[in-house]
Image (cartoon, rainbow, N blue to C red; front, side, top):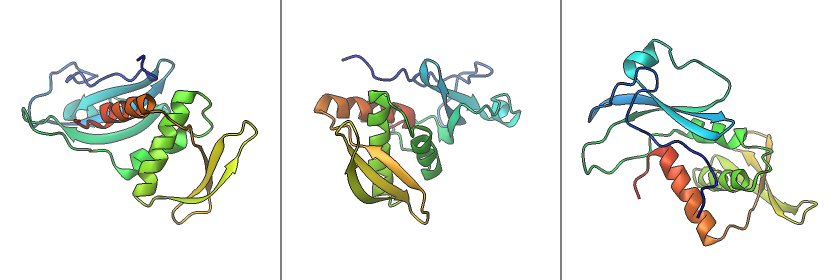
Amino acid sequence: MAKDYNISKPDGLCHACGQQFQVDQDFTATIRETDDGFQRQDFCEDCWSRDVHGDKPEVIGVWRSRIPKPKEKRKIFVGDDVLMNFFQRLAGADEPARIRFRYVLALILMRKKLLIYDRMDTDQLGREVWQMHLRGSDEMHRVIDPKMNEDQILQVSQDLGQIMEIDE
């Protein structure tokens, strides 16, 4: 099955200086939106502290991570603020892959009780659209239910795992 996203995989190198990361080394990971899709860029502590990464508007999320020991199961290092930022940045997307990705993010945020389901409507195309709001806010969010099949669910799960460093 073809990938719905073009998300670069972590390559174990600092994006700025090219230094190979070592086991147990901390680094900073970023996700940027480019014309080619979502791009992950990792930075060693030295380059990150020297601000070589820039603070461009296409940065969707930033989080700290660590190179695991061999055979150590990786953990999610992405915070709620990164997930919420990613969710909000995908608002209004009309590409099917982005709609599916945003829907799965909405499910994660609902499970974390950060996003509250209010009701379901139908749009002009006959699609189910969930009306939701952020906990503690009146700001409404519309989330299209893409009615994903098993292959699409697997693909979105793999893409999320790739971004967030989840071993399956």
